[in-house]
Structure formats: C-alpha cells, structure tokens
Image (cartoon, rainbow, N blue to C red; front, side, top):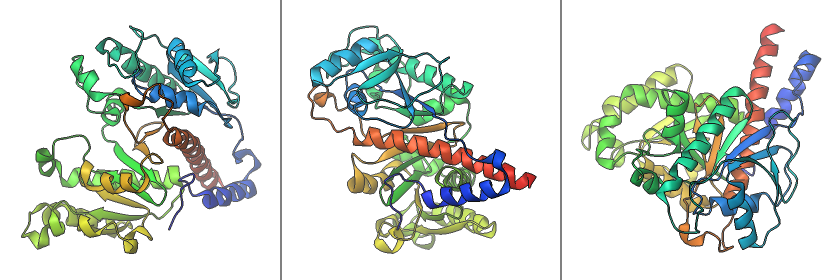
Length: 370
C-alpha cells in the first residue's frame, strides 16, 4: 500500500542519488530552484481564491501565476488575506516562493470579473494564459505547469470547442496521445478515453488505444513517480468484464489480447477485472495504478476516496502538468469557504515529478556512460 503525501516514491530517489554520486560527481542532481507556472483558470470561480490561499505559505520553488494582477489583488482583499504581487521577470534566476507574495506574469481580462458570474468575454483570457504558460514550458522557462479549474460550458458558449485541459494541452503541444490520470492517497486512476459521451466509448476502444495508454502509463510511472515495475490493474469495459464474450465482445477481442501482448514484454498487468469488484482491498493494497476504460468508470471511486485532496495529471506531454481535481464552484468564489488543499498538492507534486524525471534522465545517462 503506497502513501501519497507527495504521491512520489522518495526511497527510489534517495537510492538513485547515491548511485549517481558513486558513479560520477558531475552527474549529481543539482538543488537549484525551479520555476512552476500556474494558471488559475476561470476568473469568476474559485481558481483565483485558491491561488491566493495557496500563496500564503512558503515553497522551495518559485511559483509564477499567469493571471490578471488586478483580479488577484481584489480577491485577496475580499478574502482578507495579505498578498504582495511582484512582476515576473524571466531574466532573473528563480527564487523560492515566500509566504504572502506571488510573482505574476500579467494577463488582462477583457472585463472585470464578478465572483460567480460567468462572462464569455473573458474566455480568451483563460485560454491565452494557458497558451502563454505552455509556450514558456516548451522554451524551458517553466519546469512544470499547474492549472486551476476552467468552465468548459462558458468556453463553448463563447464559440470555442473545448472538451478539457487534457485535450487542449495535447493539441497545443502536438502530442498525438496523452493519458489523463487522477491521484490521491492510496489510489491512482488512468483513463483510456476521457471527455466523450458514453455512447461513443465502445467505438473508441481499439487495440492501438488500449496499448498506447498502458505503455504511456507505465513509462510515466517509471520516470515521474520512480516506480520501476508498476503493478497495473486494468478494468474491463463491460459488466463482469464481458463474461467471456456473452456481455460484449470488447474485453475478449480487444483488451485481453493487448494485456497478453504486454505481459509477454514484461509488463506487470492484472485484468481485465470487472469494474464493480476491482476497487477492493485485495487490489488496492497491491496496485500502483488502475486503468479504466472511460471517465465515470474509475473517477467516482477516486473522488469518493479523496475529493479535495486529489489531483489531475496529464501523462505523455513534453512537460509536467498537474491540476486540481475540482471545478470552478462559482457559488463559493470570494466567500472565503474554499479549500486550497488540491492546489497545494498539485504544486508540490509537479515539483517532485519534475525532479524525478530529471533524476531518471541523469541516472540513465550516467549508467550509459559508465
């Protein structure tokens, strides 16, 4: 049973540090401060609130909010929280985040947001802040991206087709396939399909998609979470995992052959298991990730277990991206009743994932050259 105060295998990091140190002093992991980009999301929702709340404590890395500084100041005033805003300067070396301060890469809303009141005019602000953050990550200006909640309905009502951060970021980076994974203490759930209608799911389940999802999931657990031989539990698509083909053909004809193929390649995979009995102690205590076929197959379990303390992670992007596990909660914006736990966890996990990936790369380079 793994515990995720950090959602990272810290024992492996210490092991790798010692191995690299013994092999080469020049390959030792540096302790320099990294810079993380943060987009608060919909300005009328609680993304601004939890950004202000998150900023009240210190962190060993720099946080840069890509947001409207005026909106941050006003929300801090409403919440009665101190917030010293500093203009972001990418030419200056990153420094650890100091409590009650926030570096801001200013992005201007078209209209002044009102708490709880959506304004389609501000949709471009939301998407442009994401575009700017992604460009910064691709340039190496930011080590990772953390995102606050956006309002998909408002974006679509503004005439822009948008299904979610995961798909939007994949399109921006021209990444052919990414995997959406949510994590909380004791449970990770990765998805084969994401934000599509239920009636379309079975048609999207192909051998290629299932195999690619499982390969990306395993690779990223190794590189970003320091789990070298992850135990992957796969849920079947149909009730009873298809009952041998009597309750749908997808499990028998698509999912099982892919699992058998990957097992032959050394993957540690169980399944496909009936989803209604997959999330029990027998499997929870010994798994590193559950891979489910569609959005509402595994996420209700995860959110029941850890809502408010879970995070969303996009696997397969060219940079680390984490996010909160909740929506805009318009009715709570400016009320002071919000909880920033998910945002804090997302930021800390992004830092650890980045360092883990860098360590993985350095270790393999060093061992290759030894």
